[in-house]
Image 1 (tube, rainbow, N blue to C red):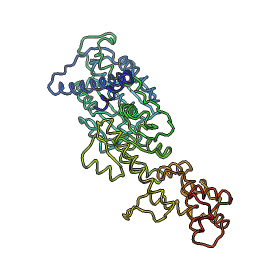
Image 2 (tube, rainbow, N blue to C red; image 1 turned 90 degrees about the vertical axis):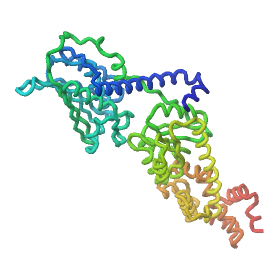
Image 3 (tube, one colour; image 1 turned 90 degrees about the horizontal axis):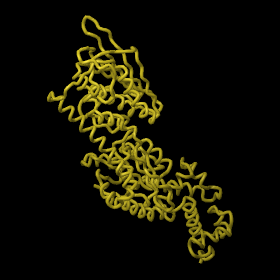
Length: 498
């Protein structure tokens, strides 16, 4: 694969970060395999209960405590609330850990910074109908789940369509296993949710006293790999190298919520591009508008806004419509490609992709833009410059509008970048980067070239003297006009009359 080739090509550079990435993904894969195996064991009846009898409250407090660093690293507050001091009952420590860990892990992943997560324990006293129940509630102030998807969340491999719920890149296994384990213990699990406000899981387990008594909780009784996988996210994620702003290199914005993909692309392109990174679609849109990069590479499936939405918004925005966009997707089918092209994508790359393929795609887009620059540069000479197809793009319209503004203010020497930007409804830096990207020249030079070509036409076709021509085309200094004219055309203004 592309990442393997990277390691082979630069083994020393990848030794540390590569081994950390392998370890992280190995733990993730092990956890997924264990969950799938547990589901298979549940189906065949091979997954056995190993209950003990003891006070479950200290154990649940221990689990909550193990998740505190994970929650704090995400800017969240995790609250452990107990309505009863002690609940003695039969319970399987390993199964309880899996259930509570899955729910807490989801809550941390899907709750935005500054949010709250609650692990609440209560006891329902025995009645004539049951012997008492333990109530475990996991509540968060996260994104919530849409009403039409709520009945499906315990289905295997189900993932909500709402991009906000994809921050953790889940597999759709955890909640299915959680429900199966709860049912194995003769319990029930319910969920309620309100989009934008949070989700509430309620587990009720029967209180029985039939197992051997375990006076105190012993951590050595746990399945250690499960505990490690449950809190694996406490490890710092791989950092994406800061490539810095290397002068003269084209700028590239990479938008992807997968740190491994960011790491791989950074390794491929470091030293070739000025690299900027965004971790979700909305951040990508904001950075694209702020930075106006030369190129954008974006994943399709992301939180906040997906790649199709990012592409559609940026291609419709005059400030960013000219930027070539490559979409990365695991879905290489025709329908997905057509969707991307309809949203304005300039190219597609199917995952996994090779370093060489990425480099060639980027180089070809820059080469195409160079050809467009040569064409757009003629707009300073000929306002009717077109591709001859009658299907001029938004970029044609933008530059024609810029030219029209320059011509309407041709004799006004005070018409500068500030007034031009205000007239276009864009910032000075956005106008500069867009015009530079389209024409290879600055807006100031583009407007000056329009003035100079207008002056040349007047000298050739009118009876105005040189001073009048200079002032008519916005040059307040005759000396500056003569110097600029000579620099542009290689002759003095007086020679243009002959």
